[in-house]
Amino acid sequence: MEKEGYMKKPFDSLRYRYIAIIASSLFLAIGLVIFFVAGFVTGIDFGSGYSEEVRIAPLGFSCAYSGDKTMVLSAEAGVLSLTQRDERGVKTVQFSPDAYPLSGDIAEAMDDYGIDVTVKDPLLPSDNLTAGFGYPCRLSSDPMRVNFATDTVDITIEDMRAALSPLGNASVQTVGETSDAGFQIRISADEGETEADVEERVNNVLGDAFGSENIVVMRSDFVGPKFSSSLFRNSITGVLLALALILIYVAFRFRFAYAVSSIIALMHDVLAMLSFILIFRLEVSSTTIAAVLTIIGYSLNNTIVIFDRVRENIKQEKKLSVEDVISMSVRQSLTRTVITSLTTLFAIVPLAFLGSGDIQLFAINLTWGLVAGAYSSVFLAPAFLSFFHRVMPINIEKEKKEEEYSLV
Image 1 (cartoon, rainbow, N blue to C red):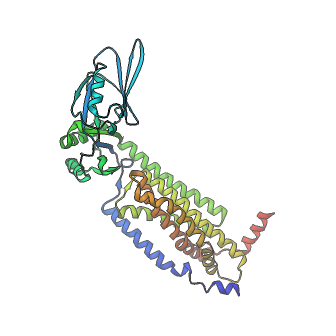
Image 2: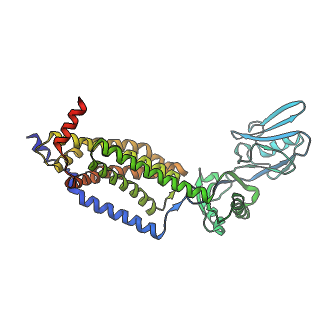
Image 3: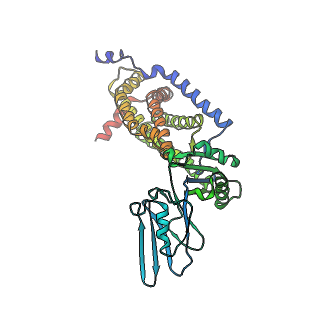
């Protein structure tokens, strides 16, 4: 009576197998069309180029030194400090915002140490020191710029895109709050261009738009064509190797029908994520590969749990067809699959909405991948297993003998 009762439950994943396969095929087809029409939006990891994070911050003052001592200007935790080295030893002075609230106060104090200071704006708040990667800096006859952010700077991402429009292929993202005037710039490198060439191109157009003295480069990265192509090949190789090892493991641990079914479902998850990226024009980078490998692990775990339940139920429910056993096994594992996916989503979704940069991109990819992985484990993998059972039927007696042998 109990065996008949479970068949009356409304959810039967195999009942929707054709709908699921058609829906997945259409989604993947849309991604394939977009791939041939527009291709991927690649980051500098996979498409050689230059990435630069800049902030627009007014120049407070510039300083230079031509004496016989060694003067090093440093910026730590938003506090400017000057280190003096000579034959008598080392002396360091910090210009804290409490003691020197304005940029002009710091400039005046530095003048007492023999530093040649040229003041541009003495009224900037010193607690908004904006230090790029030029710190620490040994002062010389070449002036070192010291910038301070201010809320009076009103530059939007549209302004930044307009300024970079002469470059043609630059992408811009906001970094931090809008009032911070921080931006992440990515631009493809032309054939034969070096990092210095691309950096000069970017900074020239920014200088023309906002004043070169107000541009503070926080960090920059450059990936050459050879390295990017090598990284792309290695990433693809890594994904294919992971799938091959999974195929071998599942075939050894279960049966070849289980292995092929799980691999097809995993390939669907990878292609579904790539289609999602293509449709919404997200950037493909090394972060994407990390998300793909993470989803392979999650999806495989869900699929293996279901398949393990199928294998056990096949040995116990001898009067039921294999399709009925598969449906029952999916139902028995459904709560566990949903809870596992939802628990991870609770941690990932906030990052997808509130994060920025690579973290946000990873979270968005992972969110979609978790949904696609749970969907494929419940609807697609069981459907493929049902199909391959017809091609290579599961020998229940052989399964029982092997289990008895493994217990000895």
